[in-house]
Length: 156
Image (tube, rainbow, N blue to C red; front, side, top):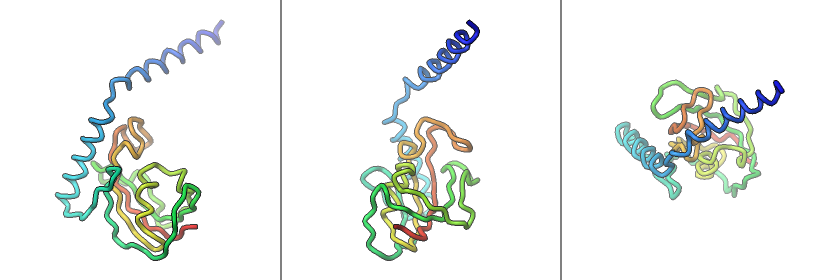
């Protein structure tokens, strides 16, 4: 009986949280993110380009090679990431490159990393839609625009 009460309480809490997100307007959020990114890159004279998905990128160094990326590509990267509205990094490899499977990364990285090759460096401004969306993460509020600087050490 006690277990049923706990299960009902957990179900009620879960439904309550999911109901809060039903009024979320993803298209309006994407428009707001795009406006914020455009204002930021303009104010800071960053020559970022908006691609067909809405991810802004600035290729600092293109790198060399001709790798055709797939979801199973292994990328070794040195990176730092912050929310556009903040100055503190929420994540960084701290100079120790890390290896990831491209298909296991957030959509913004999957879109942006193929703009460079081995030895390349890129800055990505990722709308929340291609980051963590309407979900918060440790150090990242819901609907955050992400700002990553990524150096690609290797790709296989």
